[in-house]
Amino acid sequence: MRPTFADPKIDFVFKRIFNVTEHKSMLVAMLDALLEHDEEHRILEVEPMDASRFPHTRELKQAIVDLKCRDSHGTYLVELQMLSVEGFERRVVYNAARSYTNQLGSGSTHESIDNVIGIGICDFTLWSSEDVPMLSRWRMQEQHSGRLGIGHIQFVFLELPKYWVGERPETAVEKWAYFFREAPRLTEVPDMLSQPPFREALEAARGTSFTEEEWDVYLREELALHDERSALYQARQESRVEGYRDGRKEGVIEGRKEGRKEGRKEGLLVAIERLCVSFGVELSADRRQALARCEIERLEGVLAELAGSQRWPEASTHAR
Image (cartoon, helix red, strand yellow):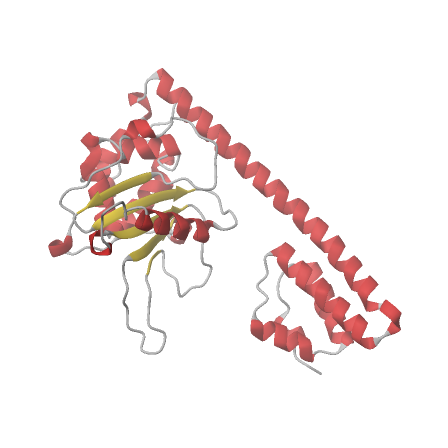
């Protein structure tokens, strides 16, 4: 039995909603919300890429731009990312930079190049820091004065897990986050999404409006995403186990090398670093300095605590 609404985070549904001429108003509304445009700077017209240029099915590759459109202010690249993969931020920067430089054709000048804004809608937490809100905007900044400038390439990220669905969405950004997160679980159009463009977006995702062929495409993409998520999880689990074994082995081998104190300490530092990489624990400059001041016994304690909890043992890095 089909759900009332298909998941708008699935690639085929996302493009069905936003990348066709008759739904251009929904694309404009979403862009205006994510870019926080005031009335004076609202987008009046966009030129989406031809939907036929996107295949109906695709493997979850590393360099996909889901939507590309432009207006009088510049070019917008919209990417919907379901899985937390290594190098995602670099990929967004690469795509924006490539789009910017590709505008400089034969006989054109630098003054004719449009600004480019890369927009990432992420179904995972990209930055765990509480200082980074659900909707974050990035551009170049002068490091001493804090003045913003050189805004020719900018970035916007919407991190869906940072929206708590227990609250009633009030702003346009919150409503889009609610739409992307909750649409597959809805059985009717809720009051908070009953006004345009959200009602139209839900209607475009309504399962009963899909043809049998479209529904088959949707199910295949949903299954491909599930398989990719399972494979990614399995790879990370295997990496953690292997990293733990290698780290312990490296620590023992290097720690006993020629019986020298320096060798033991170096081996422990290597083992700690390997575990940090395996467990995704940040090894900042401050933490490296603290480790360098630790005695061997304290480093052994750090290694044991890190291996047991997979978290950074803050209290164990004070030099003694």
